[in-house]
Length: 440
Ligand code: OGA
Ligand code: NI
Image (tube, rainbow, N blue to C red):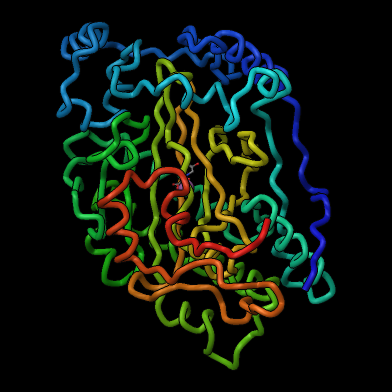
């Protein structure tokens, strides 16, 4: 089957003068491998909101000690919300990325020419209109948009999805209030067990990260919902109710978009209850990560989340009005414009594998800024952890030039991989790729 990927009309890269300028400035300063100056690549374009805070004596001590960079590991494990609230004005050493990994550099193939040409930009992701998907006369066109988006960007946004603003707005609101709880209350949920139904923590992989990330998180396992909810936090008092409603809405949305993706891939809809969709309806894995990215004193030196791809079939990201998510496309980091009320959806490693490489699980990362805290809720949906996932048989055909491109994988394989590597970048997915015997 030969499908031509049309230039995605929905993609509009907005030139952002300030970002371009900063990229150029960063390239200039960074050309000889010198340290970037503070603020050289700060992409924060907001007007200062004036963070007024009275510091306690204890906070003042923390602020003073920050100038000597002498945090011990235990203090840093209290998380970045704690650091930010203390009013520090310099980033502790453990968060400072090597120059080449800093966000202002923004390039995979770093060259000052490319940076001057715009190493960073903005993107309006392709829009998948679920109302159109539900209309038989528009479904084919919406499926084509979805297909293009998954092949070309690995990312799209869904609108007209029917999830009420009370449900998604309520989720963001309770998430915000969770991170406002006293540290002792949040810390009750700290756990080193990656399978725990609730897990509070900081950074990306806090036990392994050489450089820490400017993020605190709350992970909630959402399946089976009735069993796990009693293990979720009891504070704020409405968290269980609100997050249960949100999890159910997210799962329903996932099923609808997954059904569309399978159709777009040309995988025939099975008899009632069969196929991958039937399996997902019977038992799925679903995890929700609530991310908190507080204001950061030196955002140009660090990241909220390092470049990574997501494990799973599809991820649905709900973000507040503060930008920060960046997607790697054609060697450039593009900042996703937050569209209120929409979900950002991305293809995960499992869907890249299942689609035998047609759909792309793309690297993305999160930038932070100096004035506006940001909250996001990422919902990861896939088949049950123990289920081995390989390319769909319908998409493998040696004679038609579509050999199997990936080995089967399951959660145990992933955990074994994590134990042996840092899990960043696309290395897990790479490790599942089969060598292709081509002459090129
Ligand atoms: C994630 C993720 C993006 C964001 O949680 O895997 O990529 O905007 N989150 O927080
Ligand atoms: Ni992600």
